[in-house]
Image (cartoon, rainbow, N blue to C red; front, side):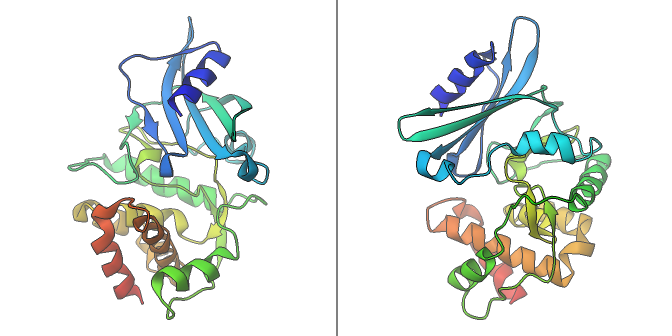
Length: 264
């Protein structure tokens, strides 16, 4: 992935910015970093999929978001994209204007002692509301996946049908949020999802820091305490539990399982 990042930077006439951090996406399937040309700085994201999976993948999320998601949702402005194949893998690179601020975490989970200004939370809430109202045929969560995942990872008593669907960013966790000025990163997955999914993913990923999890719950209490929001919390928990089986984010396994017990 680091070689792919350098390749993409050079394809755009840029080099990696020395000393600035690189940010990994979920499962190591994407890598982002600041890059610079002779005259400008940018933010570059490269995603990787096995070639056979890429044939059916929906690439181009950032480009589609630039066309359809209102500009009042803060994010780096999309500039250009490239695709290529090497060996058994396909790659997709998106070039954006530079971030305002920095990603808040290098992983899905938050750092300790994270403090964010009140306007950051207000803007995030308004942004997720705006995204939810966007009309699209893109898919973030397949309609058949809850019925497969919920019983498998939560047990036979788990619900399987979301009460309602809306549009979601699809990956609102801490490495995809910038601060102290809010920007929402990595738009590859956005599309239809169970209502409240974005808030639920952020809440579940925050359980490693109880005070922060409470702040998320308070900010999004209306949706998270609704039937759709409780379903989305369970569905997000099922995704994390699937990850636990692969050794991912094990530090939140206990609170995630406790959450499932409470909600069921």
